[in-house]
Image 1: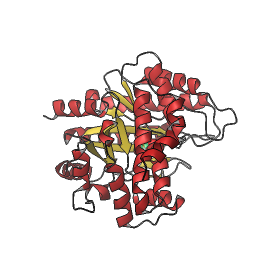
Image 2 (image 1 turned 45 degrees about the horizontal axis):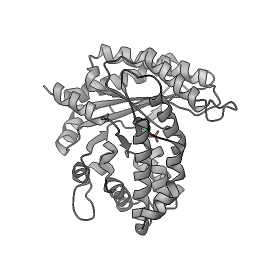
Image 3 (image 1 turned 90 degrees about the vertical axis):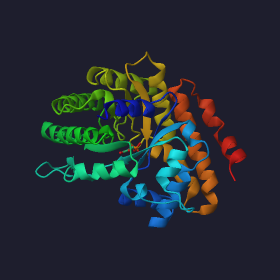
Image 4 (image 1 turned 60 degrees about the horizontal axis):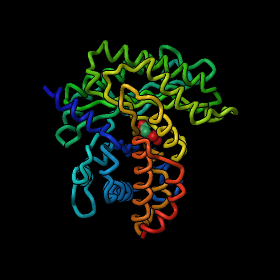
Length: 348
Ligand code: 13P
């Protein structure tokens, strides 16, 4: 009964020139990120940081949706407004991460399985009541000497498909995220091969579980050289390899691909997105659902100090604007050169 609404939401999330802000770091992950900039990590600080992100003036011009963490969807801003309402005021669709994290896969050294299916139906109903309209589940596939195994890919694909079907039952658009990590010294060809194998199995499972492709989004990794590979592929190579891999595996019925950034630098992630959008027309919208690549400069500018909130907002707006421009084929290096002036002129 939610089919039309879900298809509309999926299309709104990949609307022209807009993308998704992933702000769904678990408490442990955000603690690591805060530590890296010398910020303390209490509940209040997490709230203040996310409040500044969500209330950045004009964010809704570039950002269609925000992925929240369980704690955040229940929090209120300093003035008492629910954070979820602060997003809605900007015309931004609230979403929620519903997996419980990637844990060691017993019997398979070095591989992971994402947990969180138990009780998921009930949690989804609650999130819908709280105002969420889409969900996210991240599976992690690692490349190493004898990994990934087919079993690990299958087990994770099964989890993603069950998550997606339960989300659609609850009227929530699932964002299916099978992330093949860029950690390691593998070549771009190896990353392409593993990403292709993974996506094939993921779409087999989605079909087996009767997931409606028109009412979901795929959040894939870009196809890259491993972080420690001495031979780093160029931006055009990454764009071509990624699109080739997606065309071979992702049905055209899926409305959009919202790429994760996965540890790339913020500017490099934008350059890759821009290069893909410049290539021939793809059957799906090509967009972004970045965590670190949208937040890193903002987090650095903030550093846990309330006085820096305005400067941090300007950094988030800048990255959002650059990624929006990438989608519109109007991104250029000049936008980054302008960056310092932008920050200095409009920051506090
Ligand atoms: P990154 O863009 O930092 O990879 O985060 C996206 C995300 O939501 C990971 O689950």
